[in-house]
Length: 540
Ligand code: G1P
Ligand code: ZN
Image (tube, rainbow, N blue to C red; front, side, top):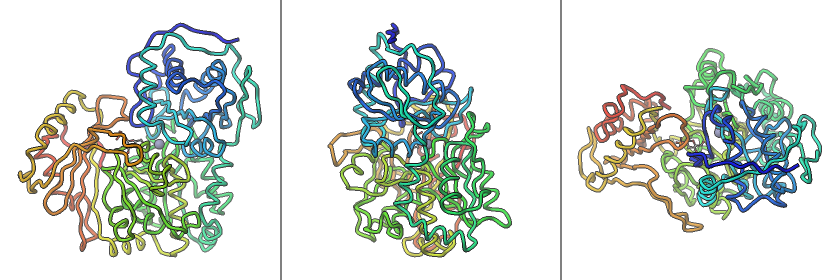
């Protein structure tokens, strides 16, 4: 039976950089999820007759939310929902399913790398028929619907058993339960040289992949262990848990410290990698050699042709604006178009769809290609394994050779988390107001050459996105970017991105190499005093 339940708008259901993210407890409040899901249906013009993909990263509230969304899709006349077994799908696997099944879109349940559990975060994201995150026009329509909602529709039915692969009926709607891993693993097998990677493992090459108790555990086991022959102990923290074992499933040296300890210790494996809560981020680390995401992107751009799926070369490359220009150096040397977009994967969608870019990446540990429309953690790991299998070099050797050829972009991001939102806004507003007059001014030890509030005109559809971060260039080529996070759930998070280039010295500690830019940031923005902090919370 279909029920129509009266409701009233709930404040703040505005999707951010990547969907709607809130505390799990907020999503559990009466009608919170239902209001937002109905707003998605309303914002996209209804779901009657449509086919959707549904799944999440298994964090707390995933199971309950999947059941609610299925009942709401059925009540609004959806023809079919393809759902991962037990309600699970990694974000890249969901993107792939939307594409290969030619679905009309999908709902992904995740707050990505944010901690999960009853006290953690939850999230809901809508992806469109290309498999990618909904563009601004769609997310605005969803938000708009959330401000006008008066009722939602839901089937009054018992919860479905999603533990068995196969079709189940929910009213008129078909629920197809699929193996979350199979199609994704098949795609990876098409893109990469599994024979060469298997031979690499057979030669004694050792790997440690940290699934961080999140969604990639089953994917990594199937692909790395079952299909590629790595020993079972190569995958650690492989069982997805609703609270990620109490951890923070963000693959960077700070949060993946267990893996970092192994990789920097004695008898370290040859290669280490990690992925985040929903499987779209990656960290790459060799024995004693951490690779920044910006460098990883550049190395992949320079070597992707070694993987069968990219043997024809790349049509173009793209990075988010705060990501280092290491990519640009490869693009220039290889004659590839190179785009700089605002932060957030959704801005790559048009470039990928139009065939202008094959490879994309962000400094926040996101790398991917046109094989899906999300960044893809295991894809990046397999790409690196393919490169190492072809070159038979260590990660450190690959990096040394890369810098010798292209130079090194020293890079770091300093995050001030959970700061007072008003103070952070004022900091940004004050600096923004001074941008026009900064050129030629001293900033600590450096001098400003140009300063802008980054805005982006999409070359495919002409849409303009403004206020995407303050970008300041200095004499000598160093760069500073400041922006406020769009994914946080408490207060504000200020992100300060710093970069400088050296064509000669490749062995410096990044914080030392960037000391002048760090000083310039403080001189320009007075971060510590304004935010009442002595130091950043996270340095990556
Ligand atoms: C952060 C990252 C951004 C990434 C997004 C979703 O967004 O900085 O690159 O696309 O998470 O994973 P932010 O919190 O900075 O808005
Ligand atoms: Zn993620």
